[in-house]
Length: 495
Image (cartoon, rainbow, N blue to C red; front, side):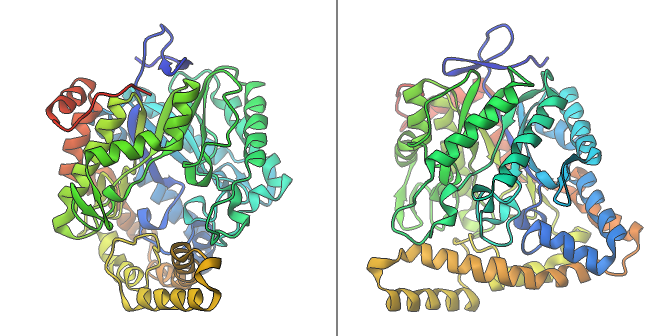
């Protein structure tokens, strides 16, 4: 039975004061679409506009409603609970709850959908962390906050910040006192320095802006909901914490994101991966030196690793390496007392724990387009994939820029990565969106629904190797025995 959670020192505890360890899955692609998860190019908001233009507003609305209906249902939650997880992190886009045309007025349809899933989570015995993944004005420059411009305008405009705070008050008003709500993850992966050139040698965070926003938002939520846990992330995609204010209120948990090369490749694990040697010891060193880990230890507050993960769309013979790397990483979280939710639950064959069947109607229909995405490198961050002619051209242009500007004035890796993002993800991704929309143009609603049913749990397939590892580590007694079996594991003080 679920019990309302709070913090006590560096622990999360239930209403009787017993320690609770949050272990679970992040769910993207449902109320916050992502191109690699759902298999389309570009950003969500521009895709919705393109679909409305191509299909008509009513047909486009039907498409996205049925996609959401199929993507997450009680069968999914029963499967997650059956694996042993006790928590889901629900990724949310503000656009489901408030429109830009009518700010500060809230959409009942979005809250109704969210409430239905929260009720289902309660029936299944799963805690819910509400994660505002896409905020008004964009909090970072990447696709996963529905940003089609690379400009994080949130930090520059008080209007966006006012709407953000007011939306959290509305969320708190509706869900205050619900024991199924583990907490409010108020902003995913802030990047306050996104308006400053990211090609500098050192990233520059605006700590005053982030601390001011966090204090204001926590205070606003607490006027309505005095007790629910609030999760705060670090800057620069939740990896920088050194400038965060010390904990300033009760029931705060701090959240780091801990993606590593070991989970992505290319290369072996243990062994040489993405150009350097990775093993359990290296992973432990990286985790213990992470600024989020250091912050939680210094201030004796709970640490939640809100995101980490590994991919399965690289070289087929490397997949066991990615699984082993994630198993070791979770074992380290367990050894050091960190809560965790892996990213992501379901997708079109990249890093989901379950994936769409490659022979499903949706995957067959979108197959040529998804191959074109790979050919043109629109999912620019997938650096582990083999180079194509398009990605080689971008790399050559990046080298030309460095040669012209000078290595002492530009960061080579950042120049290459974000040139690829601006050209392939932003420009080419948007260019491909009419191609995606045309796949559904003229399709009757019943046929469209049959295609979108490919996202339903019963039509997807679990990745058995991932499920086996996670099912073991979701269960604390198995997680502990797993650590004992690893001879390289060192016993260090818990966070």
